[in-house]
Length: 205
Image (tube, rainbow, N blue to C red; front, side, top):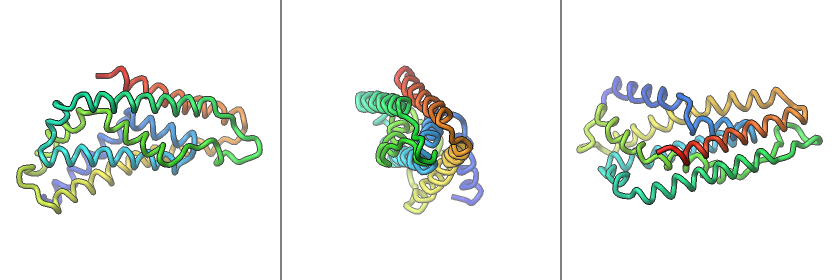
C-alpha cells in the first residue's frame, strides 16, 4: 500500500464514521448518561465490531453474511433489545442531589462495550461493504500481514477518533449542567436516544 492510499483509506473511513448513525447515537447517549469514559468504551466495542468485519472481508469469508443470516438475525435483535433495556434503565434512573453530575447512574464497562459491539455486528451488510470497499486500496487475494495491520490500525484510529469526538462533546455538554431537574432531563434524553436506536435497528432490514 502506498502512503497516499493509506491516507485516502483513513480519510474515507473517518468521514463515514463521523456521519450520524445508530452507533453515533449510542456513543452520545452513553456519554450523556454516564460520562466520557462510558462513551469511549462504547466506541471501542464499535471498533472491535469493525475489526471482525474487516477480517472476514480480507480472508474471503464475506459470504458468511449471506449464508449465516440466522446468526445475524439473532445478533440484530439481541442488540436492539439490549439498547432498549439500557435506554429504559437510564430513563428511569434518579439523579443524585448529594453527588456531582459526574457520578450519575452508570452501567459496567462491559455493558458499554457490548452495546457498541452489538450495534456494529447487527448490520451484516457492513462486511459486504468492506468486501467491496477494500479492493479499491489493495488486492485482497495477496494481502500481507503488515498490510492487514495497516488496515486495522487505520480503522481503529479513523472510526475510534470519530466516535470519541462525539463522546467528548456529549460529555462536555453534560458537565455544563448540575441541577437535579436538568440531570433528569438529560437521562430521559439519553434513554430516549438509546430506545429509539434500538427500535431503529429492530425495524430496519
